[in-house]
Amino acid sequence: MKKNRLKTFASDNNSGVSPEIFEAIKSVNVGHQIAYGDDDYSAKAKKTFQDFFESKVDVQFVFNGTGANIVSLQNMCHSFHGVLCSNLSHINVDECGAPEKIAGVKLIPLVHDQGKITPQQILGEVHAIGFEHHVQPKVISITQATELGTVYTFDEIKALSDIAKQYDMFLHIDGARFSNALVKTGMSAHEMFVKTGADILSFGGTKNGLMMGEAIVFAKHADFRFKKYIRKQSSQLFSKMRYIAAQFDYFLSSDMWTKNATNSNNMADYLAQKLTDISGVSIKYRVESNAVFVNIPKAWNQILWDLGFFYYVWDELDNTVRFMCSFDTTTDDVDEFVSEIEKLASSS
Ligand SMILES: Cc1ncc(COP(=O)(O)O)c(C=O)c1O
Image 1 (cartoon, rainbow, N blue to C red):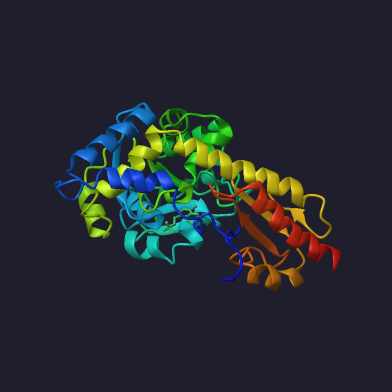
Image 2: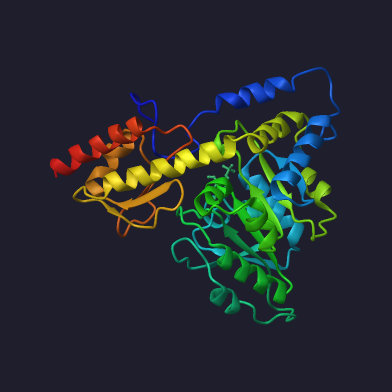
């Protein structure tokens, strides 16, 4: 990646770590603690999650988002089960087949609309229930905020959750950017996860300023009794758990989650607004969190790529690229980036 830029718009994973997180990690670096999550700090972080969700949720910390998703799916599925998800979902396209290999499930991708899947699509898939020749749909997995940066409303999640219950399925939420969705909608975690009746949430921290670690949140109503074995078998049990727990404890008990997610959302709005009038650029999806998807002329790809501005082309047909804002993106970063695009537009 190039070269002369401090910040890029390729991914919210390209940002560094919020400085407060180092302090949070340092604060638990005292003496010995029982390993593998049986330490005082992990217990405190779990309590913080329960306060944040206003419910006696259970929590497991894991290393990364892919791990959170595959551990979640294993808790909900046998090998003859299927997972209904969007065709653009991270589990379907960005986990290198880990759900199929490690969770051993069949993913059933549904064509997304603005990154979302709908109750109607689920109804089209719940057939041949009990028929031994067919994989049995067991999980609806949605991403909030979606991979395209859009956000499900309360009613949309609740409708999917209701269908899941009706057909004895589970609702899983990949919440790598759950904080961004909370900030955008103004909903509380209780509303978005507990009141919608969802079952398991992969709750993200890394994209909002943590150094490492994601959390799996299990709804109070659900009985996932094998979760401790499943996490260990999936190589997601960290021995020095207190160092992930401390990050989440600080993240949720301070204003960090809302401050960081608000900034990345606002910067995406600002970026989208500035890109709107540039000739050759059109915004493809609604900007509702920290992602801005645009169509640009193909000829610009390599130049922007060299500047480190995006990963890959999402849709070759109309040359869709993704720009992501981070917790530390500033208006100056956006202005500087947009001026590069303006130069391309004026020389085209
Ligand atoms: C929607 C979504 N889910 C999960 C993840 C987690 O991925 P990782 O395993 O890289 O932490 C990401 C990261 O890009 C993501 O965008």
